[in-house]
Amino acid sequence: MRLFHDWYVAVLVNEDGVQVDRLRWTGGGGVQGAVERLERVAQARLTPEAAQLLERFPEANVEPVGEGELPEVTAEDLAFLDQAALRLAERGVADAAGDLDRRLEHLHRAMEEVRQASNVRLSRLVEWLGLFLPDLDLDKDRLGTARALGEADDLGGLARHLGLQTPLHLPARSEWRSLRDHGAAAVDVQARLDRLEAALRTLAEAHLPSLSALVGPMLAARLCVGAGGRARLAKLPSSTVQVLGAEKAFFAHLKTGSPPPKHGFLFAHPWVMRSPLWVRGKVARTLAGRCSIAARLDAYEGTPMTAEDVAEVEAKVLAIRAAHPRPPSRKGGR
Amino acid sequence: MGRASGKPPGRPLSDAVRMDVHAPWTWSANPGATVYGETLRKAKQGEWRRWDPRRSKVASGLLRTSGAAERLLPAPGDHVLYLGAGHGTTVSHIHDVVCHGGAPGRVVAVDLSPRCLRDLTRLSHARPGLVPVLGDARRPEAWRAWLPRRASWVFQDVAQAHQASIFTSACERFLVPGGRGLLSLKVESDRGTDADGLRVKVEHELADAGLILEEVIDLEGFEDKHLLFVVGRPPRA
Ligand SMILES: C[S@@+](CC[C@H](N)C(=O)[O-])C[C@H]1O[C@@H](n2cnc3c(N)ncnc32)[C@H](O)[C@@H]1O
Image 1 (tube, chains in turn purple, yellow):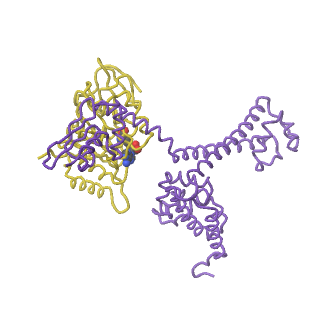
Image 2: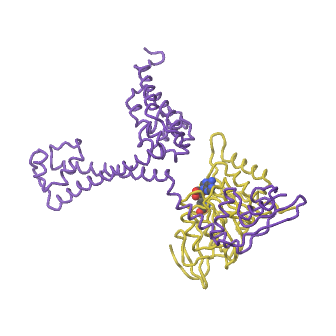
Image 3: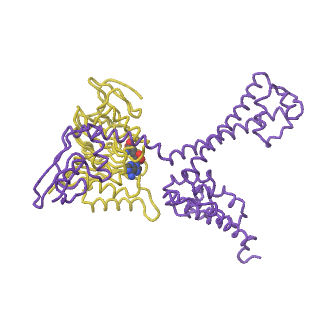
């Protein structure tokens, strides 16, 4: 005895291929009834009709959905199917917001954009203000300068407040107001950037606990976004993780045979950045290997890495540095 | 977005499709609305929508084919399968065709991206018979129930690894004997294999799956390095 079924029907056929019993969904539950049956067959679970037939003939063999000759769908079935499909598709769209990869990506990209905007504003601001205040240090505490400007009443007052020479030229009233607005806006953008970073840290620590513990939440987020999501990052070989973010140099290497990049995003990590030039590649390789392990722990939701695990990696990095205190001598040279 | 009126564009391919020198046009199943900013042309009892060959590989295929263009399209009332539906540009024109004159056609439009599905579900509200599916072309078990009758026409445009084998198994599973399949493929030389090599490889894969290759249309000029493979599934012996 074999049980064939689909979302709208279940059929029982005996050894000679003769139909013994059959149950059709008759539209009970309306569109929702169709939704439930479609979900069940998609997950390879029995529909209520198939389950009922199986109760009558427990010895029957349940065949995979879609096998065998089933009665045709009716026009009413199709009308229900189409409405149910639309409902399921809309639910899928709404469910995309549950995907932390997508949320992390938007936060990360928004942060990069705001960071860039913040830099542009501050650079313009100190150059503009510096024109009037020749002894202003343009590189020191640009945000503090912006804050003081945003709160000043006039340029002379600002100069006194900052302990600078009295300016030789004063801006026109409207010009001054625009300059001051620019200062206030720069402060505001910085505050938004801080909030974005805090939100990104929180999300990254939840989504990538091990990787965040290992390289910090910001770098963890960048690796994840760069790889196209957590699951993909976990599947990458660690040699690819090592050069994530250096794709241009990597493809140039494949094409022209230029030396391969030693690191991409991972360069931002102090273990790599603060290592001497000649060990950075080795350190980056070690770190990339551990990043791959961390990403797999995160993707398969294993027990996250602990502070001890991270300390052990750091010890390894320090050992690499200690083993290579001097640059390697060139082949044949002295 | 233009709205000109006057005589119908070009010459007829069928009741639902006309062809001028630069583009095909379809008789709109949802008059008054554009889907992607395409030109509309009012007619007595409805409206023609210009089918932009730079935005749609089926449209450019219709212009480039060396055979009868109408054979590349499904007929009103057909059930069809579209893998890699994107934002619905091409899907909307195929929907115009299969639902022409109120025919009970269905376009099952599968895409992996929730962002694309967002646009497809909106479209579906205005176009009954357009059935959006959030699903993976590589995992047909999850959505095969959405297509209870075999399709007479299968189109695939997924920009994915192993595209040819995804297509052949879709045809095997869903295409009715005697039906037609179109596979859009980007053939770019890869390390080791050149574009011609890839083309030959795909042709072999299609033949091994028992599909009859009717034509390979080069879309160069409309779509860089893209080929459109047109196959038929042999009628049941
Ligand atoms: C080039 S676009 C399709 C454009 C569309 N054919 C048109 O002409 O309007 C390719 C689409 O394939 C989708 N895609 C990629 N891999 C897929 C898969 N495995 N299953 C389903 N859709 C996929 C992508 O999300 C993307 O929307």
